[in-house]
Length: 159
Image (cartoon, rainbow, N blue to C red; front, side, top):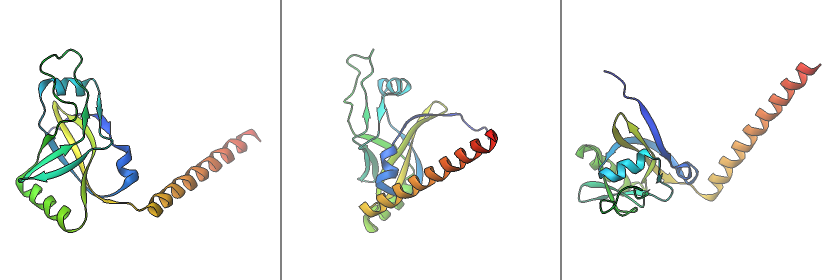
């Protein structure tokens, strides 16, 4: 089977800072033509978006897709709810996990897979303030170590 090329449109960087991502899933998304054209131009924001399961269907909320510049009456509301496309079995599994265990569904990225638009969803659990601080401390320590190693290697070449 041939692997389809992917092109990332937008990444939700805030999601990995605010949540522990336990598992990720791929879902299709139901869009109108002008929304797809706008996505091809790269105008999408996932910053405050989240997913909800309503009547056995998966919906993405608060995802901003800017109106297409050359569209007129066919443009849709930028923040409208959009249906995500997954198998019913997967949706039921996600519904059980989000209801019982305190997890939430957060879109991590949106991308083209071939000619289709896909959304990567994360099954996430919220971080506490001390978890965020610990992650920042680890990241800073790693950056300091890499900087020290780089400076040490530069210094050895000058001798």
